Length: 154
Image (cartoon, rainbow, N blue to C red; front, side, top):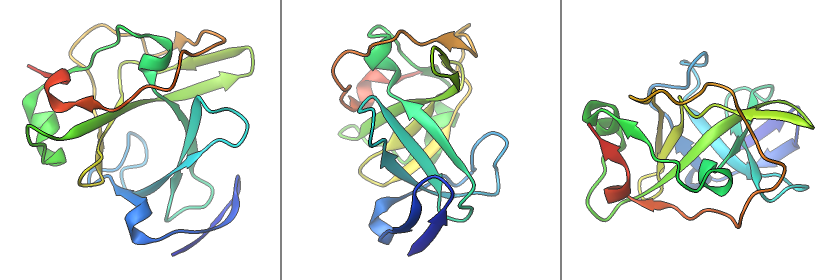
């Protein structure tokens, strides 16, 4: 698949490099296929690039790289579309907004990805996490995917 993007130029991606978000993302419900592209300048950041719209990409981070105690609290129904099993690994990302020196991340609406099935969803958590949590200037080492047992369903 060939994607002409605004941020990365032309990308050649195989279907197995795409993640399916059946419900889309908040504000982009009609966009279902996304690629996760590493940022060439910052290993703490990746870009979720729409496969259908070259002008749609968003910076994402692993919140646990910045906030080691971060846990996701969502309803079981929110997780159903990921088709998780007890051995599944879930990768959690949050979107980044702002500009250098004043970056924030949305801890209230994380993106969850089942790495085995390449399925993702965006959820609204059941807690009082901030929509705009300031990001510290440095992240700890890259966070690993969580086993499904670490994602808490209410």
